[in-house]
View (cartoon, rainbow over the protein chains, first blue to last red):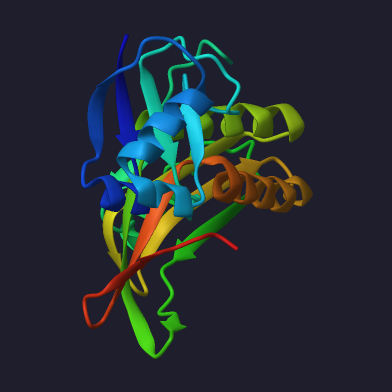
Length: 77
Length: 147
């Protein structure tokens, strides 16, 4: 599956892009994060949550939808 | 309620006092309403390590944010006896002293509007993926975190 990974806030500064396409065979959010942290080591120093199907998910969630977002702490309002 | 269309809450740039005034005026025909309460979030000129914030630049995961705003709206109507509710949030640059969040709740009687308003604002701060980049007067920046 080709995933569309979206990055926001300080995370987009680390990856130097707001989104990218990544080929990912099958697996969990945690497995995807391991791939992303190998690609962008600085991600490991940041506090963030992962959204899958527009909901915050845990690392053991199996990825079934191509859109994944990495969200730093919220600061609306 | 769940069949209701998800609204776009975002406005580009600051929310003007004209817009807020017009929103209130639009409710004059709704005469079952006896109480409005509004929250207007204003960008504060925080001083951080000797530097002063001059503006906040807002971005959001817009699809998810609008879904979350919709869920907050539904939860609020389920919990409180409101006549209507409106939420607007800025995207892009909002200078200090300008308004970046406008929440407006209305009900027949006053007590419920205060509780509902606080509930909505706290839910937004905690659960909606909006990100504020604090721009300092020297053009450096840092990413804001809600406290």
